[in-house]
Length: 167
Image (cartoon, rainbow, N blue to C red; front, side, top):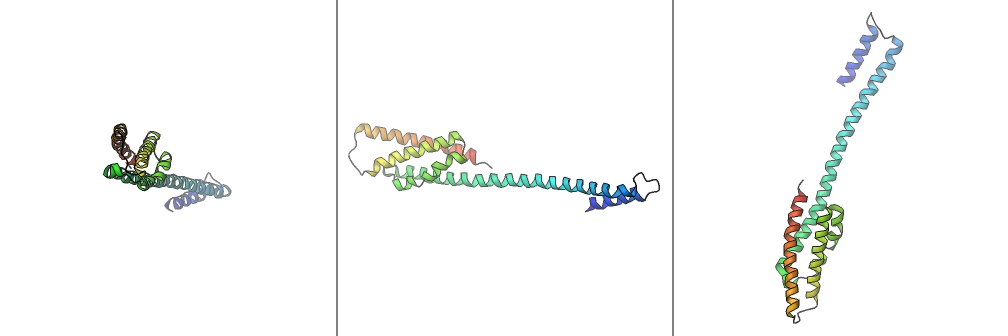
C-alpha cells in the first residue's frame, strides 16, 4: 500500500508540476504501468516464497515415508535379533510393503541393502516355518552364516538410514 501511494503521489507530482514533462494524457497509462509492474514484482516474490514452502512440505513428506521404513526395519531387525532360531514368517512378512517402497524413497544402494536384508530374513523364517527337524552340521553352519550376515547388514543399514534421515 505504501508503494502504491508513493506511485500515486509521484504521478500527480509529474502531472501537476508547472514544468511537467509528462502530459496529462500520458499520466494515466504511466500510472497503470507502474502499478502493473509493482503487482508483478509482488506476485513473483510470493511465488518464490510459496515454492520455497512447497519444497519444505515435500521434504517433510518424504521424511515421513522414510521414517515409516526405518520404524518397520527396526521392528524386523529386533525380531530377528530376539527370535533368531524361531523367527516368525508373519513378522517378516509385515516388512514386505516397506521393502517394495524403499526404492522409491531411499537411495539405490540403501534400497538394495534393505531388499537383500528382507530376503535373508525371509529365508531364515521360511526354514523355521517347517518345524523343528534335525539339521545337519552343514545346515547349521549355513544358518549361522546367514545370521552373521543379517546382523552385519542390520548395522550397516541402520547407519545408512541414520544418514538418510537427517532433515
